[in-house]
Image 1 (cartoon, rainbow, N blue to C red):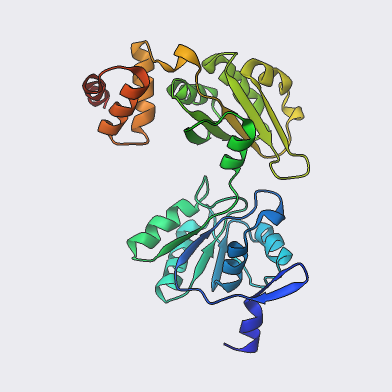
Image 2 (cartoon, helix red, strand yellow):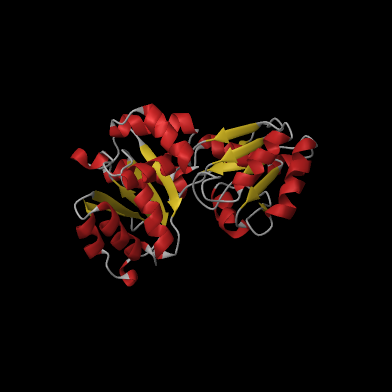
Length: 299
């Protein structure tokens, strides 16, 4: 390695410079901070400094992080608009023996971003995939909300269309778990209003915005109060994570046929029919065999 290449593999923490250790050829999934750049892990910093290629969602956003830690490498753009072209080039680089670090704009890659396409392609090509864990807005919101017990369901972004949004919420309302949603700030108020209608006014929920940033806000209230507090789109700023607590008391028992069908459909999206029927049986008290046949009939 030339002196220039060696300098490229350096990184800096505070006023101290370090030489990154060589990486084995692999695709490294590197979590980055969700706001506060100080939340970057030491392993993540060294991985970015050592990787032959840094693939990122937005080169301008990643450049800010790289500059913070004295990493002079030039990032390579990989996003939803160029994944069809950039993805094969990254696979080709990996097959040629290079190391590739994949990052998103914030948090852990693959969660609601195009990296979800790259990992299956890498695995299909026999390429090793290495997770480098770190910040996650899902876990940060769950732990700060006070609504997480022993299970949660990550629902990602809801539809921008009210009908589809309410239909998705209906399918989740009896799930015995905390529910986590990503939402844009300009739709958060409308989504909270729909949640009041679908989940009921008394169900506990939390709006988490600007997590780890200067104006971090976490508000946990019954849904009707939370919706009232954030009833104007102009009153919500920054990235938003919504957490809805699990149903309380007999709310977690799906009593009607429509409730049962909605629960089965939601579970079947995440697991095989037999397992979905077993989980629904645990949640509702209905016989597993009956629920399994019901699910097959729906399909």
